[in-house]
Amino acid sequence: MLTYFVIVPILIAVFLYFFSDKVGKVIAIVAQFLFVLGAFYLLFQTQNDMIITNVGNFRSHLGISLMADTTAAVFVLLSAIIFLAVAVFSINEKHSNLFWFLLFIWESALIGLFLTRDFFNIFVMAEVATVVVAVLLMYDRNRRRIYDGMIFLMTNVVAIQFYLFGVGYVYMVTGRLDMYGVAEVLQTLPPSQVYLAYALIMTAIAFKCAVLPLSSWFVKVSAVPRAPVAIATVLSALHVKGGVYLFIRFQGIFGELIPPEFYIIVGIVTGVIGVVMALAQKDIMLLLAYSSVAQIGLVMIALNIDSLYAYVGGLYHTINHAIFKAGLFLGAGMISRAYKQREISKIRGVWRWGKTVTVAQVLAILGIVGAPFFNGSISKYFMAAEASLPVTIAMVGINFGTLLVYLKYSHIFWGNFCNAEVAGSKNLFKKSTVMVLGVMCLAFGIFGRWMVNFLFGYDLQIDNWGYVEKVVIFAVSFGVAIVIARYAGFVTKGLEKHGVRINFGFRGICATIGGFFGLMLIVIALT
Image (cartoon, rainbow, N blue to C red):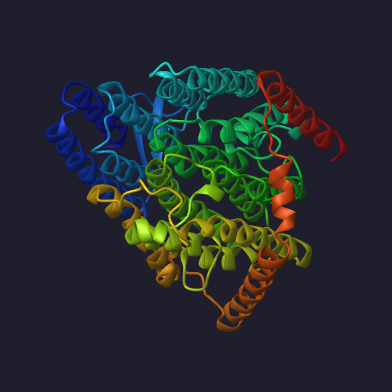
């Protein structure tokens, strides 16, 4: 059964390569919608028991095995939904057959990454996804896109080599590549035998997660000029989630070889610097990309707090982030194309240009800032429910920065048109996509507790007074953020003036990879 979840997107990709006219796209989108229903069915099945498929009927630990538990099934469902949204959004775009082919190959690679339980297959799927993204960036032969695509490709190749060396070391020690087989052997070995392998593997995974200082590649690719907005959307909403998923898996296999406080500190630094960088941007896509980095920092904090509430909150925020960030990127793509630019200060009057898009964007913004009754509010409540006071303060601070970021972003909705040639948005497919994603942000908040139970099988309670306290903190933060945005906007303008951003070239990114690996070795040696 599980093999079909990897094969079906490939079949859709091949079909679209030969039949990418409008009728062919409609047929492919219908097939993708049925695929979403199949992903729902898989999630229902995994709530009863784990599903394992041994490809080629080989025994476990010997052949290729696919495994779906509740977590994997949720990520498969998320992939199916995001790619369906992107496909519907792009149906009227004048993309080549190659674009549509690569888009669904990308989906197949990510789903394979979520389902495989083999260390080496993770490497293969990650490399396929990397090559696909690089070709998507470079296929129209624009000089800037070729440069950024090559940076993306080469830096990811360097990072994945750390993973490959780590896997080789694991195989040398355990004689196995199957996740569960490796976990069984590791229980019998002293931790000192796998420290190096752990540091190598987790460096590559941190790179895939786009945590600081390893996030330069992600920001660079998310804001490539004239690149299809679908690429930035999938990168932010789903691709980096592959790194988060692998972090969860490998932490479960290796255990806590590094104190969780290390990753909490990394998450705090990522979150704080992410919001500062977002505030410093003039480009609408760069602002959204750095905001994604900040949210990854929040997730990293939650996943390493010793609390079931925080862990489930981190998982749920990962899903929520995919939804509201997909809506924000797709909406921003519509806006920047209509206004023929991406500089925030030169985009005004979006509400008059397209009320549907504005409402959808506002719903997504309310989700990401954690407004009451929206999806981000529920996940952030769980993440901070049992956190220590210093960590709670850090999370509130990051969310306060997020409020400032999206108050700045919201300036585009009001005022008069800056461009008299801008026409209202009439594309029904695009407007429907962003509106559905915006409504999901509200629905996943109102029915948040039920969604957590449905997706992850945890019936977590929401303390009424605790939630009221969170609402009060949000209200105070929102009020202070408005005052700062109104009367202390010179801070943001100062950041913009100096063009603050993390923009490493190839050698700089490679240096950060090596530096992060060295830092992990130092932390391991000291613990």
